[in-house]
Amino acid sequence: MYTIEQIKTIHLEITQKCQAACPMCDRNQNGGALNPHIKLDELTLQDCKRIFTPEFVSQLKKMYMCGNLGDPVIATDTLEVFDYFRQHNPNIWLNMHTNGGAKKPEWWRELAKVIGNNGDVTFSVDGLKDTNHLYRQNVNWDIVDQSMRAYIEGGGKVRWDYLIFEHNQHQVEEARQYAESIGVHKFQAKKTGRFITTTSEAKQSHQAVNRKGKDTQELKKPDKKYQNKALTKQGALLQKYGSMDNYYDKVPVWCKVKDEGSLYISAEGLALPCCWTAGRMYKWWHKDPKVEQIWNHIDDVGGKQMLDAKNGLDKVFNTGIFDSIEKSWNIDGCSNGKLKVMWWWDNNTMQDSAILDGNL
Image 1 (cartoon, rainbow, N blue to C red):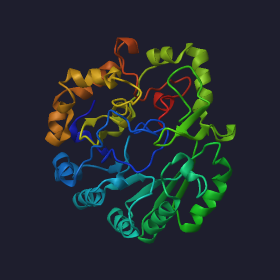
Image 2 (image 1 turned 60 degrees about the vertical axis):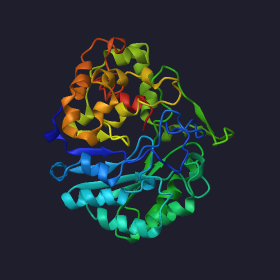
Image 3 (image 1 turned 45 degrees about the horizontal axis):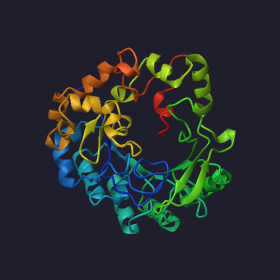
Image 4 (image 1 turned 135 degrees about the vertical axis):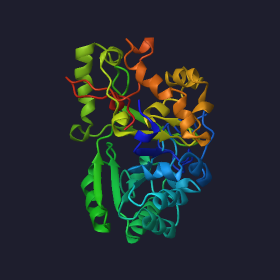
């Protein structure tokens, strides 16, 4: 797939910990009980130094922290890890994705100094004071607002990503205006893919619960003008292929991370091509998470301990895991071993499977 020398981007999940309970996040069960398959792992500064040597850091163009399961703002050594990357590569682009609901203003101002002009922070804020918590459960709006302001005051650039649901669609323009008033560099209203499934069944809503298992917000799709285009494209795929399984079997593969030279490091320290492949490892609704295809590739190279980048990235590359994944793309059908979760491209429908997997 690629060599260590070809890696230009690192996608780092520094922790599996998070103070939030977003109902469509695999970290918890619809916003309630914790995913039983995870152990709240977290990488320290020393772990990162073992994984990313100064020489390796110097070859990179970009490093961003964005977890499948956790929020970097909760990790103990987030600031120090960013500083380590900046020290060894003054030109690297640094970015962090966060709900923004933690840390004191001083921490955010210091982060702004470390990241500087060559980077930004993406705040995932889905509404205003009266609505953000409906999806970002347990996130305090006042802390989020304070954090964004402090980062901007420190000289940092803020990007505000706003997922549109039925319950917050009426506030999109109000939020955009508010973002401009506090100095947000870029506001993006996102047409979420969270109502798209890998099956042929349409998903109309999603019931959120709290940590006691009681119903909270019923999350619903927004009006059509705010819906992800993949929702309608999925209908075209079903007409053409008959089912989503047939689509996955027949469509050729195009790998985004291969072209970009991007590598994903999980909070366990595991090296995999991307968050999509790593994201299939611990689905909470499976009694045995190893029913997912990605585990076949992991077990074939000797188990996940062989992918532990804390023992050296070169050792992970020598396992052949990346070549194994790439070779699977040419297998005839997912039931025969073609990896289902990857960026696939259909020249006729211009649709990729990452969107259809509902992880946007």
